[in-house]
Image 1: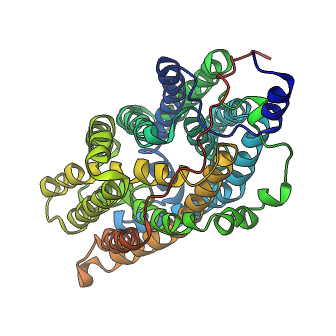
Image 2 (image 1 turned 135 degrees about the vertical axis):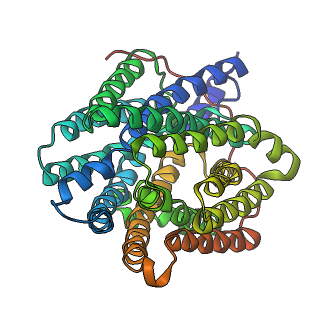
Length: 449
């Protein structure tokens, strides 16, 4: 038995590492909890992705307008929707990250998931474009909880297994975007409001699941001792990069890739609708194919590639494949060739797990929420800048298609961002020793209170 001096010393030492005393079976169970929580969230989000641009077209169109004019106008309106969503991510994500470091991951996740459920109902019942816009504002704030889910994963996973665990989180996103858009496309053919109602039901079921089942990953003794509201300022939150300069290069890689990746949520539905004449059904099916292939890579390939070539090598392979896929999407002369893109693009699923794992190694356990908040703030910036770039470019390329003949111009811009990220990764994404690795207490049990 430890003596009093040993106990006093232990109580004064902050325990910030992953829970190495928890059994592997316990860690797997905890990862599965958060996997299913993230999965239901993403299914709900994916349900509305094939129909939101069409609802905007419904509100923004006018009798007698050609399809090109309606698409260009919807692209213009969608730009404001997307930028607003990114602004909310930028301001809210650091706050949620800081709150999760102080009060635990579970209450922050539950509050955000409940907010999403209420918001989907709001958007389903929105009678005008203005009300739909308000719903998008709320959605941007609530969706910032994904950073807390990633911090949860970092809490319960040893550093050497984090690429695999983050890959599993990526698989949750892939499964969600398999089921969500496919089902959303089918429901959208019935009624454009129906996917929003189903999304609300899924989000609220997810909240109930988390309330009764999801354990807390960050016990009280591992939490930040106080709230520092200066760090909740999204600009001040980036002070973490100044405190840990080795994060800066990886942050640049992630920003460049996120700028490239934003081309899909920004223009995919409008692009394939204009280029190939696809409605919600075919567009949802294409997203289904993309999701299935990404799921296979993230579930069965990530850990094997990381084991063989390391996290840095996996990151660079993913960036090469992403650039090649965007090139196919942008230049494909037929929809058959266009559908070759997802087979290469699936290997972009190597990028985020590898980058997240490299970054989490540079930060102690009681700052993982702060790190994920900063990452989400960067994603928010990309969600502001990306849609402005891509929707403006789509509007220009659609309007000048007869003279310029390059409707895939936005996707070629994404290629340039991917290649820039590849160069940055080559010079800046070097492995480092883990920031900490002491043992941590067992996961706290969920409580209904």
